[in-house]
Length: 155
View 1: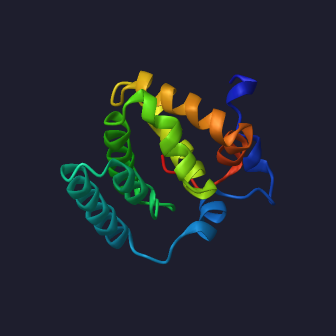
View 2: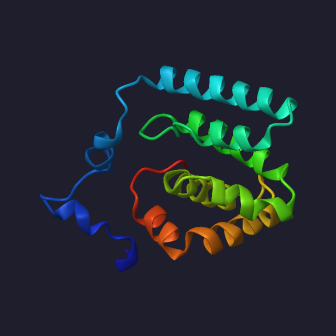
């Protein structure tokens, strides 16, 4: 057995399990409720998109991200919804839209960008990289650090 494949945490009595770490981020909602909320939000976003209200569609898509365990389908649906909205913006409008977002919304957007970049076969990486570049210009490197150190993920 290679030393790189040995799970040394199995020998540590004080090691935290993933369930212990993530349990503090549970919303108290059942996975079914989270999925239902995500589907409702996706419908709201699509309605706003049909009206041509891209800014409010993005803001609505970034509301209440599905954190926690056992909500992978809700996380996938949320990521899909956000990336669909991002694809509709013109490159010249991106910086202005990002400036209109709060710091918390910018951090959530960065989480979705990383979630999308983690699945290049599903999402357009060039669009996501453009958004990442503009978001980093506006929000700074602190946004990246906050997202990387946050245990609440959207992917």
